[in-house]
Image (cartoon, rainbow, N blue to C red; front, side, top):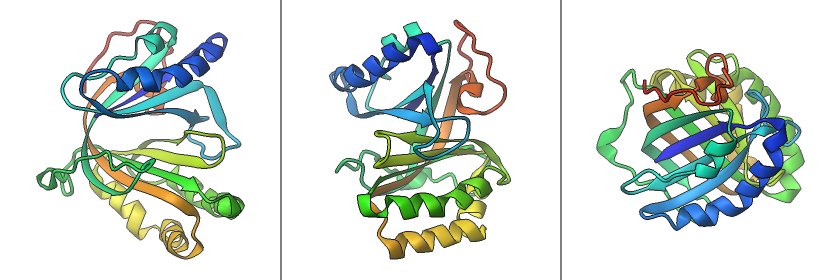
Amino acid sequence: MSLYVWRVPAAAVPAALWRMAVDPRRVRRQPGVRFVKLLGTGRDSRFGPASPDPTRWAALAVYDGDRPEFPGWARHAIASCRLDLAPLAAHGSWAGHRPFRINGANDAEGTETPILALTRARLRPTRAATFWRAIGPVAAAASHASGLLAAFGVGEAPLGWQGTITLWRRPADLFSFAYRHPQHRQAIEWTTTTGWYAEEMFARFAVLNVVGDTGVIGWGSERHAANRPSTGR
């Protein structure tokens, strides 16, 4: 599976919105594609409906065989980054699906492998306001967490379908924040008691390869190169 992130110029935002509308069906028709979601993102490393970034867009694709193509985005993007991922653990569902096939032997815990964490939730309308009030301190704490390489919000709709993507230098950094940081532990407790979510998904992935300009995801400086050569790391 792969996560794609694109930076487009302001003049190409209408074209990006069109791609968001037409690409899901087109990509699902490609051979081997089992699941795909097109996503808006938050500005910089911020989360929430008040900080959308109309110049940065993302797609998550789960596939068997050849990696799916997104030629429309390649035409408009001034910079892009792709992360190839292997699912390690997942809990919950996404739009009624459980898209990630977990191989128990692939858990990267205890290694130095970079790891990506994904959270995705469909908020209950009556709980949305309390959720955004409560999550602010957690997001602020995450931005200063040890080992955090990149973080940004993602969403399928402005308010009700929200998610986060965080990239960590190694699994131990993620687990230290998730289970030892007091504000995040408090958020976990609130999740079980307040009923914020109508549907939720939490998953983590080993990062197998990173291609392109990592500045697009907030990892290092963004170059805005129109045709930067792809490089794996």
